[in-house]
Amino acid sequence: METIVITGATSGFGVNWLYQLDETKQCRFFILGRDEIKFKSLVSNKPLKNEAHFVHCRLDSLSSIEKAISEIQNKAVKVDILINNAGVWSSDDIAFSKDDIEMTLAVNHLAPFVLTGMLLPLLAKSGNASVVNTASFRHKDANPSTHDIQLKQNYSSENAYCNSKLYSVLFTQKLASLLSNTQISVNCFDPGIVDTEMLRKAFPKSIAFVYPLFRKLVARTPEKGAQTGIYLSKPNLTTGHYYKDCKIREVSKLASSHTLSDWLWEESEKLTGYSYPVSLEVGV
Ligand SMILES: NC(=O)c1ccc[n+]([C@@H]2O[C@H](COP(=O)([O-])OP(=O)(O)OC[C@H]3O[C@@H](n4cnc5c(N)ncnc54)[C@H](OP(=O)(O)O)[C@@H]3O)[C@@H](O)[C@H]2O)c1
Image 1 (cartoon, protein in one colour):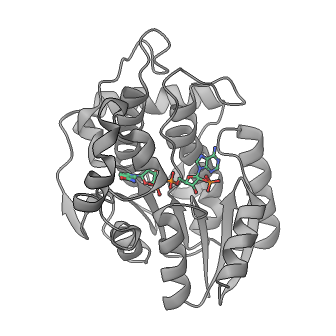
Image 2 (cartoon, helix red, strand yellow):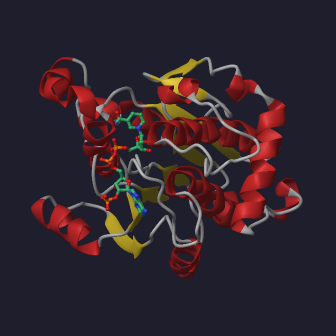
């Protein structure tokens, strides 16, 4: 039986992703979320048929992530699929996580970075594991500053978001290459423009009046938004790719930069104080 760890499954298209996996697999879920009441009301309205453990995890807190990991380690002997779906479009004014790191960077990139690293030993025990990261087409609009990864000097919620999604693509590719001699595949995808609370938050306030029309005419349903993630939630995948609509797509020029990728890895280790195992081939 597969063991699946998923974040961002209590709202948005992550809910559809969770229920679709529940429909099609015999598995055991570890659902990482910050709001247990929300999760309980979700499953009391529509019960899951597979075993599901809610694990309290605030992705804007490294100590909360560590606690969640030890809860999983106590209950699971392996992890077959890790889904890093949770994400945030932060407020217009810069905000900081529990660890005093810019919120978008903390939740959208550093949390998956640490969570994935800490789960590598359990992923290795699967014998055929998949890591799926939710990225975005907005990675193409990123404008990172290598002197100021947190954008403390020039913050905008949009730039913080686009940068964080560029980091998801860079992280996916680098981790896939470090794990190329293992049975763990790592991929990311763009779900498209999806009708969720995040889309409402990201929509420019100056043209908020056209949002209802935009939502109706342009946005995808959450069912459709979840499609590529569901497609990737299986073993035996090629690794290190960016998908959209279940097909491998090109990434931006910045997302192909090894220099940027090495910089990001170093910064991520520095900011989190977490280092990946030295030898990923034998160490996991
Ligand atoms: N919607 C789009 O058009 C679009 C386009 C491209 C990419 N994406 C990406 O798709 C993913 C899902 O987005 P969505 O549109 O479904 O957004 P959403 O409806 O806002 O859902 C976001 C999810 O992330 C969780 N989350 C946020 N901050 C968290 C934290 N600090 N700790 C724990 N969990 C946290 C939320 O938990 P709660 O349920 O507790 O709020 C929720 O489950 C994100 O990575 C997003 O960047 C979305």
